[in-house]
Length: 215
Image (cartoon, rainbow, N blue to C red):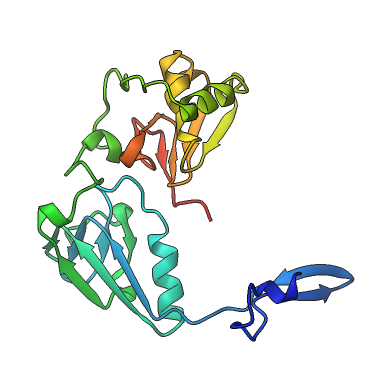
């Protein structure tokens, strides 16, 4: 396993260990301490419960907070505003107050939904866009790669798109009018709909589901 996962002489302890359990070899990754988690949500109530109704996805919010608290660390959450205890829909609360140490209320300029958008309800599932027609991308090397990838798509398949050139597959598929022949997903957690591109990548318009980010 390449010297325990070490890449140079600075690292002395093995990062990975090869272990044998009942005759089967496995790679064991020892846990390391996590001291602080900083995440964002939409609202916090007075008990520290965090809802995510305006987010494009809950990402790994729940798991990150659980891991940090289990490690003895602190959790800091940035939100749009604080509301009265008991007023949040529990189905929208992804991080309960038992995991939260500090809540920071941010100005809207510091709490945008995406890098270029304060809030688009079609990315959070609050509303649906009747006709999603992303502007065609200019021809480039990445678009050619995306077009070649789109040629591999088949009807009724589920396709997971990662960050970078793969987002061009979604753009080309929708340009060619075949985006709704299959289910496109992004690693940020959106399933179905039309994946957004550019600096909005990781979100999707008219998603069918917003899951936790893939692990």
